[in-house]
Length: 377
Image (cartoon, rainbow, N blue to C red):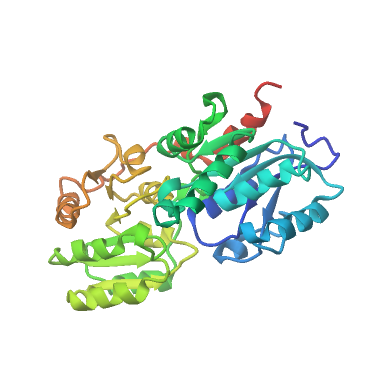
């Protein structure tokens, strides 16, 4: 793979949009921290939209296809991609999430991309694709085509050991082409930053202890269970950061349980570190995950963590040497009990505690991706 030798070689970091999810943050951090002794990083998006688009520095080039990677758009997408990449020296591609992964590999199969492609899965493939809800023929076709394409990738990366193992078994990926690389932690989480006065004033109104959780308001995140578990706590506040289609149902549930006045749902925030630094406990109620970066962010901000041990990720993050509790069941009462225990004085994050998050350092993570292309040269 050619380096940045002045001849304009680039590595494409491909993702659908820059919506407010973990995979999008990973793509941005790879662009920001890509080793400068290598090819120039360029962000490739299907569409220039999403909450994180405002965080893209003008110094980083962005290529926009202008069409979603949906299978029904395959022909149009590939035509636009061919025009977009014409004359550019592509040294490699790192593609994120199933839809973009599949269409990048189709582009390689069609001769549009002649460089090695690394595909990255960020979640539980079976649950995230909704295979159990698909018609049998459609799910069979999806699995067959995805396996055919992924086995031809230069490497397949899972964002956790669990995700990598699942993808390897589902699609028969050779172990020498399978990697587990954890998600990077944005630089702003690696040091304390002053809280915005408006946020500080808002927090002063909330009764302590303050529980916080971050994510899209979708079934995966289990926020309904979190609200039920919080309702079993006699005091304190719950802050849920994020947006999504389940907001009306969650607000109604909080009202029915009589805890609406103790729950705040301020929506999506571009700088959740301010909230995390001011809270007392982070709680993850997800039914499934890939590698929940918010747990790492909570640790970076000095918060203990309570998390369900779902497939995949939490058990790799909430370890014995880190403050917090893993909940081994889907039972709401067990989640509530773990929250109560973790809020006790004995389980609180000890002053001065520093959690080793060096494996999530963005420069380290970017170098691990870079090394995939260098192996065997």
